[in-house]
Length: 378
Image 1 (cartoon, rainbow, N blue to C red):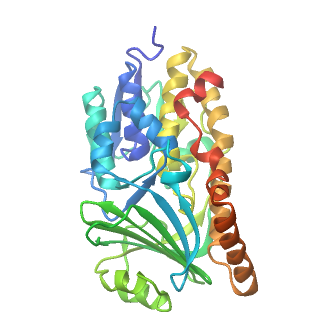
Image 2 (image 1 turned 120 degrees about the horizontal axis):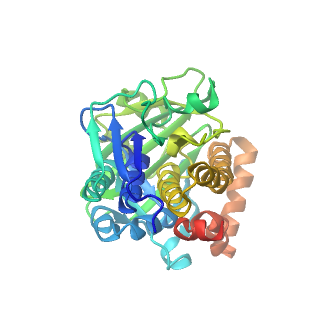
Image 3 (image 1 turned 180 degrees about the horizontal axis):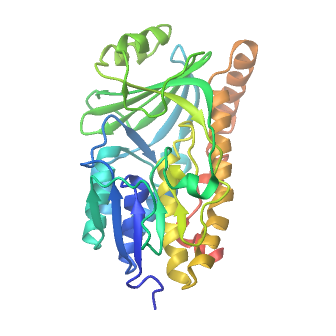
């Protein structure tokens, strides 16, 4: 007997977190309404790396065949220096052959999740901005991102701090037959990440340390000339990629604490509303997908809503805290300077050559996690 059968649930936000939650909850019998302030679900200029811990959720929701069709297999991760020389390589095909790592345009994933949520019976209301919680809502889920209106209701006013880093994001044409490799080019005080997305597109994210700041939110238009100037000394394929950039978004990177309070018995937070993360571990969307499944499973297993939400927070908060901290560490490691950088890169080259499986296994705790079975053990 499903504890979610016919239970009304309102979700604020129709991004990856909100739509995955809508799909997971509606499939378990809940009457789901998603409120989205935008007039249309449009996601521009963003690529995502989706690791196997999230693919397990998409598979459990019956979405793997469709997701496979809109995404590209990621077969390796390459860490390179600013000249383009290999520092370390994680051969995912060889070292983790049982796992599914994928590269996808965010817009394609959002469209897939929207269709799946509607098919499951969720109602999605666009152009609906929520300024305060609906009074007649027995359960409100805040999936409204880093500038959440719901999070302050549970945690009060909070002030994120600027990391001193600014990022650019752009899409360019991908070269024919581009391999499914995520490449990270590391330089003093800056790094650039690129990977193909399939269907003729390549994603670029470039981060540089600078004393000024930009608004949080990557939709602000930037100047491609500024991006090219910041990475003018980079080699390998980077100059050719940047020469093709015509439009670029820019945003300041701010560090937020993982929310202390994710729920109060009537409201709950998922995704970036609960745990915004720096984009240095490719787990932002992945954590949102994990959250959605675990929340639905907890609510479905226990008719006591307050107890179910408390269990959800207990299961999710420690893991998300660890992921956010790991992303923060990568932010430092990618931007090393001087002798420290030389020593670190030499160490990575040695490990990659002598124990190639070690680098992949360092993140076994991340990729081996199965949200689908997490609630059975927790």
